[in-house]
Each structure stands twice: as C-alpha cells, then as structure tokens.
Length: 291
Image (cartoon, rainbow, N blue to C red; front, top):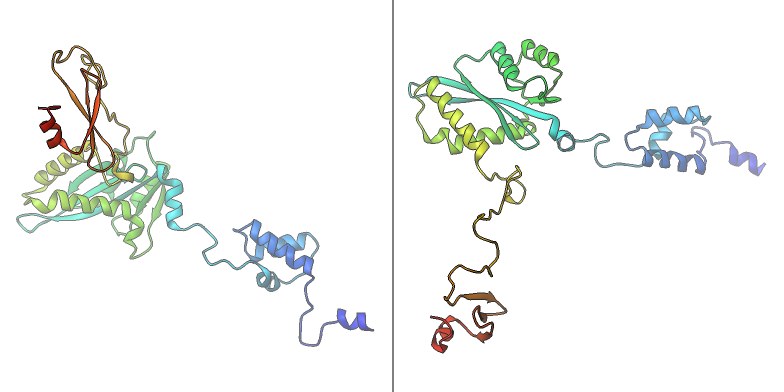
C-alpha cells in the first residue's frame, strides 16, 4: 500500500518526473545550447519517454543570454565576407543637396566604392553595386539600412550577383556601424572643411579623399597598426646594418650611450673599448670623456 501511494500522484497534481529523466533533460540542454524545449521534447519522445513539453522547459538549464548568436558575433564570424553601404547628404553653396554613396568591406575597412549624385534612384544604386564588385569579388552579405531607395531593383541585382541582402533593424544605425564610422571620418576630415560648389566638385574631392584613405599608413585599428602588411624597417643597400659598421668616420671617436637604472649612463668609447659609470653627461664632459 505504501508503494502504491508513492506511485499515485495526489489529485490535481501531475506525476513527478524521475531523477534520471531530469538529469537527461538537463544534460541535453547543456550539450545542445541551440535546442529549445520543443526540440528536446521531440528527441525524448523518440527515445520512448512520455513527458510533457512544459516539464521539459521546467527542467532545462536557464540561460541569461539569447539562444542564438547576436549581431556582434555574426559580424565577427563573417567579417571577411561582409560589405556595407550607405548614403549621406552634403549641402552645396547654393543650398542644394548632393548624395554620396559609399561601400566598405568590414574585414579591413577597405573603401571599395564612392560616388556622388543629385538624384539617387534604385537603378543608380544598383548600377553602383555592379561597378563596385566584379563577379569574382562580390561579398556574400551586404548590410544596408531600410531606406526606401533600396527597392526591388536593388534586391534583384543583389540576388543576381549572389549577394545576400542584410537590412538592419528599424532605427538601428549601430548595426551598420562600419559605414557610419566611415561617413563620420569623411565629414570630419574632408567635407566639413570645404564649401562644395557642385556635383563635379564634390565627386573630385571625394575621389581624392578615397585615394588618401587607401594610402594613409595608419587607421584606428588594433594597437594603431596599419591593417595592411607593410615594411617597417628599411636598410640602405650601401650601408651595412648595426652600430658597429667599419669604414664610416674612421679616426673619429664615437660614443654610444646606453640607459641603465636611474639617471646613470654608460659611455662606451668605441675606439678604446672601455666603459665608465658617470651620473650624467655634464660630469662626463667635465671628466674629459666626451666633448
């Protein structure tokens, strides 16, 4: 009777789940972080466990973050295959509005394309995308905002080029941060310091800025290093490297200074090969070690 009372649940309550099943639900949710309660419930039914989906959700591990990857993780994982495009407005001396169109790659923040127009249309944007990306260099994803100018003509062109369209969420410019930061650099370093006379004038200025942007040695990258690989040290072919080269300035007494702890220095006389510890250069001059 006691065993029967333990097996039968009180009225109004569901029967208690076995400890082994609860451990199994917890293990499945931990080892498969992308699985939700419906998926785990289906797998348990295939294994022969009769359990409700609500019970599976109750005994799953509780996660604080979202089950899928966030926008930042998506950008980091796919940066080499992602490009971004955007438009910004530039006023002229006659209070007309010109529209500049930019495309940038996310991997190295490479400025791929820049152009200017007074009447932006979907056909014009589609033509700029075609000219910016040859067939063998097109990215897999292209981030854009939800401007009405990107109509069906642009989406069809992207689909024909094998590019997946990735519009940002409404009122979320931070999701297109690479293009927004490039536009901010163009404004601060170029457009805000000149008076634009017309469309041809602005196009010429932006083309010059694009050449400068691609050639400048450093950008705000990791540790202020150039994203491109470049030579950092150059040696003249007619002069051997190192401080102890022979032939140059023979007969002259050369002094090499090496810093040590505090204000002391070691003045090594290259001709004699000896070294003397002195507090500073003034004492060295007074001692007759250096001129």
